[in-house]
Length: 328
Ligand code: PEP
Ligand code: MG
Image (tube, rainbow, N blue to C red; front, top):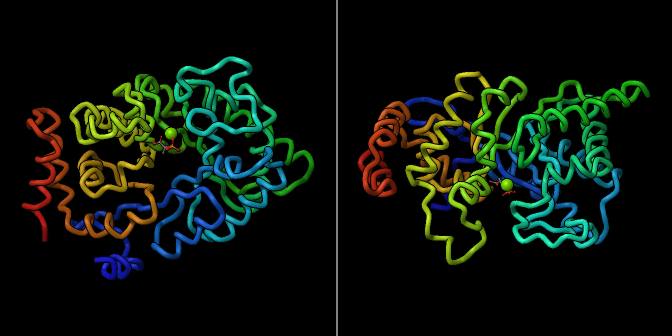
């Protein structure tokens, strides 16, 4: 199997009925970029910029951030990289940063983290914006904001980047040729105001790790809960459909960048829901490409829609049966 996955490296991910799927990888450190060549992925769909902060003993200064982003862009070449602004706090606390401003957080995952922290500590966000904008001088930049919970948070974050861009322009510095701004959808409340968000964004990426933790009110790292709720449950799949359909109808590219997309059966269900962009852990690229090649996407979408209207008692078993019935 391993050898055959490696052989898929240069094969474009395509379903049996000819639909091209974009398969990107998740990364976070400079060395992770090697995964692009090793797997033949289409790009980096989630670059977790907080990793540099997590492995550093002190707050990484702007110059260090900029060097990393430039190295990553250089290594990626023509392949797109989506940089996610820092998602610190929650399960990613930094020893050198006062995360709670003196208040102990009882629920750090739901606490002062990610964009919430970044919008309050604008010095941090401005430095990162400058680092990204300068690193991408002369080429295109994709920026994505984590934990967007209300559309105004996206507006504020984008405005902060645009102000930094204007500053660079006023100094005659090189700036990106084009900037695309995206939001992560991982807080369920955002789905309720998606119609307000969609006209503002250039792309959407669903973070199923946090999203499912919040949908089921189940800590994503709790060992006793790890097996309890299924990514293939009707609740999750229906929720995802509610997000994917309006985004597609509005012509906004929508991806899934949580771990769910790296599991063949789950990824199959996502394709059934109309997803055609995945960003996954590099080791999953081969298995996912192999799975995609077996799919009649048209039929899968029809059957998935029917199952969501009328859920079978065991959704996972239904998808598994579908996969084995349709295996080529
Ligand atoms: C997610 O929440 O699904 C996600 C991709 O981000 P992270 O795992 O870094 O929280
Ligand atoms: Mg997340």
